Image 1 (cartoon, rainbow, N blue to C red):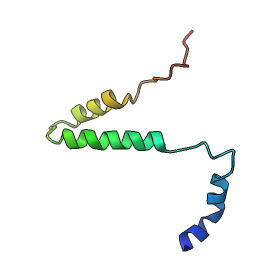
Image 2 (image 1 turned 90 degrees about the vertical axis):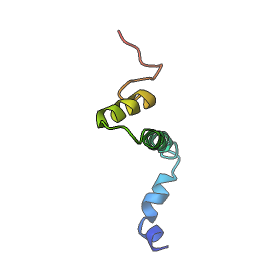
Image 3 (image 1 turned 45 degrees about the vertical axis):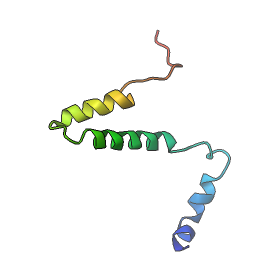
Length: 71
């Protein structure tokens, strides 16, 4: 209860309609996927291989939005 009391103003602000559409769901999904890759790729000897696998499976570093148009 003390933590809630200390952070009451930010909690109330986060519940306002203009801020309620923000979520950390996509980031949590990426974190879960990275942890799963680390569990299945436990024997990787080279960190660069693990990093490449993470980039390939999470599309990090690549803009996958369909609304992006190039001139």
